[in-house]
Image 1 (tube, rainbow, N blue to C red):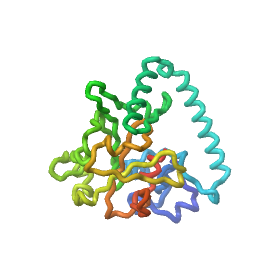
Image 2: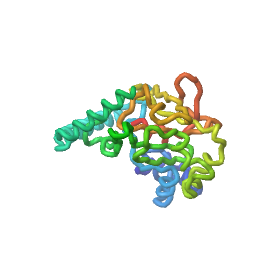
Image 3: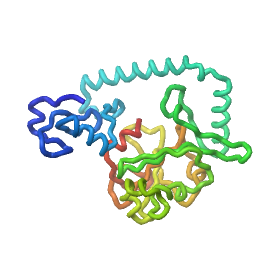
Image 4: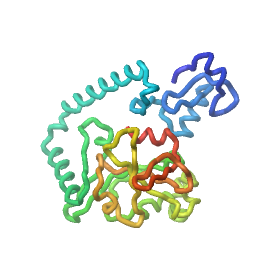
Amino acid sequence: YFPSPFLLFTFFRCETCSEEEAKYRCPRCMKYSCSLLCVKKHKLALSCNGVRDKTAFVSVNEFTDLNLLSDYRFLEDVGRTADAAARHPTMHSPTTKKLLCCLRNKARKCNIDLRTLPVGFTKRRENSTTFNCMENKFYWHLKLVFPHCHAEYTLKGVPDDKTLADILKPYIDPVESDPVVCQRLKIYTASPQSDVQILMKIENRKQNSVRYNELDASRSLLDNLKGKVIIEYPTLFVVLKTLKNDMVVLGQGKHIFISCYAILRYFS
């Protein structure tokens, strides 16, 4: 967090309490705050970590020397991380390489382009996806994102023959969902199931041209992943059709509204 210049915060009030003049501005979501208490409240309300997004898109017209310096330092950090990952003992373990190769081959046979990241990357470290040869079935590591509530949940060991509707039941079904989760995702549980839309980001597109595939909730996870590129594990965005947003669904030419925070966080 950094103090706003004096001339700036005389024009802005705290966006959390709306009472005091702003003294600080969040490097990530650019919200104004007046005190440490309001900073903590805004982080909790928006699930914001307060860390500036170094990969956020900046148009050419707004690009400055500071952005150039930031990009240069970011590339240096990436280089150091890649070098450290290359030296990691696990990277050269024959067992690890064999397991990853087997996982990618099994996915390829299912018409899924599964790509793994080098050791040291967060998604590589998090991924718990396995393949059961006896059952001839994937058990996926899966992340569910509910942007309208700024919530996300991580699932482990999700069988590939389970439908998306069944996967979402413990979260958005008004009867079967956990009471705590139901309260947090109230906007979803109160909406008709027909309004729920499940999207997955299309990989390998430019950051200023992000598109999403709409998935079929009645079909299995495996069927929905066929013909798609998966980097480590699937991340599903659960949105409501009735709420406008700027997530563009491929082939539909329509938009669905979600906060910039939620979108930018998962682009990187």
